[in-house]
Image (tube, helix red, strand yellow):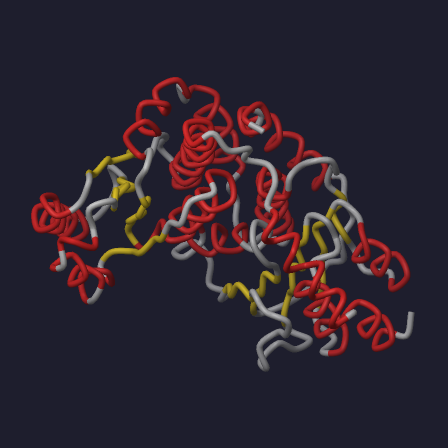
Length: 335
């Protein structure tokens, strides 16, 4: 998996080319919903953070079985599932069809591609054969390219800079951070602008490193979570990773320093990871890239295989046995 992660720059280039060759209708819409779960949904969170001050249209991420009630024929719904078989996304796809939303699918195949072919719904077909969480560049970059096609943004230069920034990151240095994290519970803190990156890092520790982890964001965590550090006995194995940005506001910078000073003697340790690159996209992706490599290196130190996710597979198998949701959804679609 580490070799796949190191190919993220090439995957961004390839994903951009694939999307540019994909035909999509000239949709008109006034809101955007990104539908998905797990590693597929995080691309929606990244998009929302990236464009929070670049776009007038609201963006929502829906990690559920159903779309919000406000979804209608003026809503663009991106349905994203790497496998094409994620039941939450399939269910939301059916919702989107029934609500007459504008739909674009991003997938490598599965039931969702099959349904799109039958219903003549556009999709971006990305390469198969990856672990879904390792295919993030293919799941994320199409969103940017498609919104550029709708003339809502223009981030071509940021994409190019991001690709170059990722190529220049030295992964050997990340092993040192992993050694500090061994036998700890990682806690990722970031400014709200990097909430999706922090969440991604948390889930990569879960899936790759096979450890519990959590995340939170400034300034909100200073209104609640910081109180939890008053109990020193419960935080001896906590190791905080701070995601930092040279562009962070003075308010956030001061908050981080004050928070560090209060909790530093009550936890196992703190490590700061600084974003790299000049554009917001490159800074976000650099932190995400480092987090992905870090989770793999921690898996190696923990002596676990980062690829299998047995508990997730067990949940999916048992849900299929008890719900058989796909068959119910196909009946709703009448296909």
